[in-house]
Length: 359
Image (cartoon, rainbow, N blue to C red; front, side, top):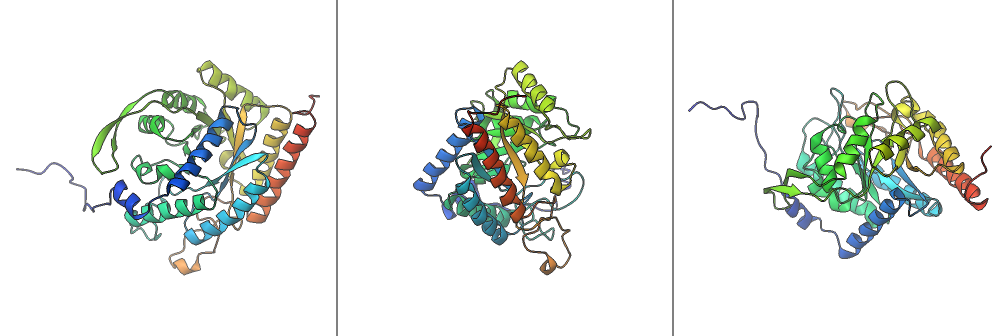
């Protein structure tokens, strides 16, 4: 009989099931309870029950676990210092959607040599998320591959769906069943419609095919995500973090029957792809919050141990420690300075009666 399937598959390698990986790297009941508390805090901020802002801060992507841990230690200290104003979640992105070609992230290619040892990548990612959570710092990831969450979702406190996948029905259905609040980024063009439709779709029950913990396929029937929200990241026509942009976005969410909840991404097109401009975006966010804007629930910063970015060299020993291999990031000193300053400005406004008087 003529073969008609898997004609372009070179080989298939066996992968440990989520249950097998959990058995090797189990989380304690104490840690599970702590993560549940983190998730509740994030959800309370999205729903306006907690007046703090969600601060999602960290590398564009993590490629070096050692540097990731060093960064987390610094961020934990900063998070404690600003905890009365910001609830800090470390950005721990292991999957990178590519416009064309490029490194696809630590989970897919942990050795950064196109060997794509995905099982190794999953183990490294799970261990790193466990270690960061053990420090007392919640983590957030972008969900790209629909199977990967079964390996790490119990460790996440927040997640995002990226600009390139927001229109995907697969990701909308997946988000409806995730155990954490999910933010949807506007499209790369800057249009908000797809992201708002995605948030609305994810808030409803869905049925989809997925992988169970034991590795078997199953039909998952979700209840809908209880805390979907919008992430403004700018677009081809320019930034969208200004007051009018936020007001328009909130109005569109209300018209779609959604509770307005907006996070501002200080990077990407909002910074015109210039990592050094992120402080300008954060300053605008802080000003809006100080003047009483309540639909803004948080912000995102791409930050690393050292500023800028680097290309991946053929000789990996030449990689600069603590420098991004994807989008450029602000360095740690800058991160600490602008986050502390932002917290002080917002705290000052609250001490003057909840918000500054309008002009």
